[in-house]
Amino acid sequence: MISVGRKMTNVARRTEPTTVIDGFEPALQRFWAVWSAARAAAGGKVPARRAITVSALRALTANCFVLERKPDGLFYFKMIGTGVEHMYQRQMTDRPISDAVTPEALERADRFFGKVLDLSCGGYSCDIMTTKTGRKIRSSALTLPVTNDDGARVKTMTCCEIRGVGFD
Image (tube, rainbow, N blue to C red; front, side):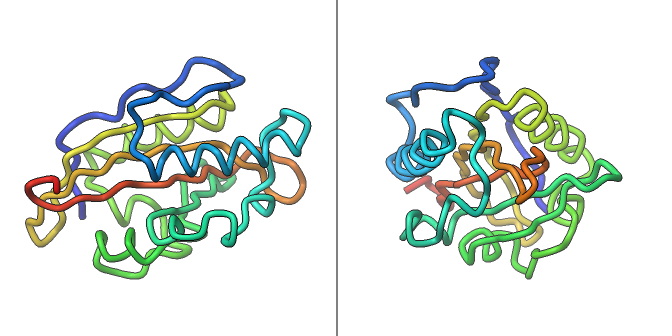
């Protein structure tokens, strides 16, 4: 389990995000550029998940994950990079997000990812987390909406910048 020390913040209120904040970490800026290019290719609409390829993300894939909101309203990991799985210290593909966060953090996470989908906007979070082994982690993350193959907005894609104690 992971407990979140700071709340998720800065969910964009715009339905059409256009620029990235200059203060974002370089990995998150690269992720934004890849997503923005896919969005432009989709005529300015939310891009399909398949339009954002592993080759386009290159070195970012270890710290990316895709969540899918199922009809029951719960979010499940559909794709998860090795860096994120290492943080959770177990395989998370096809598991609900509730397997990864504490009950206190689950409501906030559901609300955060839900807003990204429902508003078709980006969300940025910067959290201090403690893993089940007691390891402190600083995670800055950019979450953006993507569609499934039939165009439904049921997936989010997140890229994280993860750092250990001391935030090196």
